[in-house]
Image 1 (cartoon, rainbow, N blue to C red):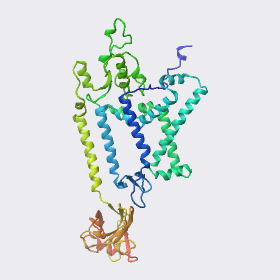
Image 2: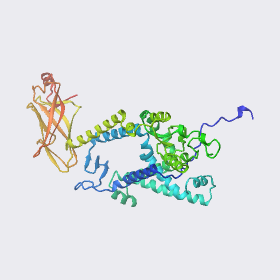
Image 3: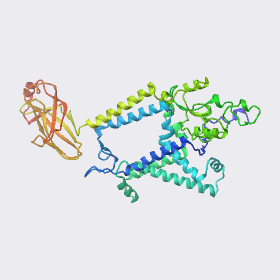
Image 4: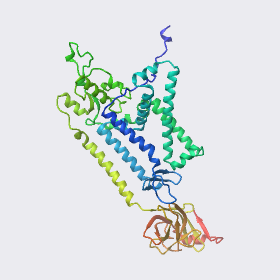
Length: 494
């Protein structure tokens, strides 16, 4: 075969399966606790009840899309208060920046949903198929009845976990007990079944098969985190100056020239990402610190001090290479960058709390009708139309008296109602068409655009709210009246 017939090399490398070995240690224990807490919160919160009174949902945490409200225990967020949600997202982002700048990718290693569910799926896999060596042998084993039985059992448990995950998600958007009964009776809305099916598939696939591929290729955070780190950021690192040159033969003649690393590969075998931390910092490292537990265990057995792999900053690495003690941990955490993130995070949090307690229970907005901008009545008066929206954020119906602020030349009226009082039902928004009429020859009627303030005062109460808008007049009122054809009560101007 000539060289021209040689097929080009493939640019695609098939995924190599990773079978993390079981490990014990303080970081692994911490990960178990975080997994239990986060999964417990996710699965159990929709079932917590909270009494808000009649005609209101009694679910503690509920995203009520039908009524466009978000309930969080005693807090009720309306659509116009979306800035609370935006503030929480800003706090989450600042918190991520803070923890990353101080401790590296601790979010990825401990609390990210992909990490939590992957850990859970690996735990199930270990229970059913055995630890690392047994899973490796099973991977290379032919597909016989034994292998099919283990794989189908594992996949079935994964599917149940994924199904519970998708089901728990939809429970946050409607009453959980009611939806659960409807789901079991096959009478729930198709959207619920579709959402559960989608989340079941993604959880099953991401946690069971994609695993580290999601962290490396799908998630943008590994590529962003480098901007969050500096020389004082603590990350999981290998103390190369202590471990090298590595070697296994500790009884050989040149054993005294070897470093502490015995090249046992324990740190590689426990890594859920399948990387070798001894190669230095890598984008795939999620800072789960399991390699620290594995290495410390080996160091204990060979009689060497712990810390060959540990949390280490670049500045400490320079000091340790020179034989000097590293900086205290607090100096790594309490530095200008982290303090700035903490200040911003706290400022946003305090602002949200203050806004939550000072917010009113009445929201008012006024939108002028643009087509036509004004109408000339048969007697020469100028009338503008507006859409008034009053949102009553209490659990009782309330009535409000509408007035124009300090302007006797303007008269306010309500469509199809001679009174100036509107009633807004409990927990609802009232949409009402209102009119402002300026007398012929008044300053308002002869001014093209002027500012107007409308007040809504609760009858028998102290609550007041206002909305500013514009009134459109006609500067050439006399010419307008001369052109009036007299065939109707009003004429529209665009």
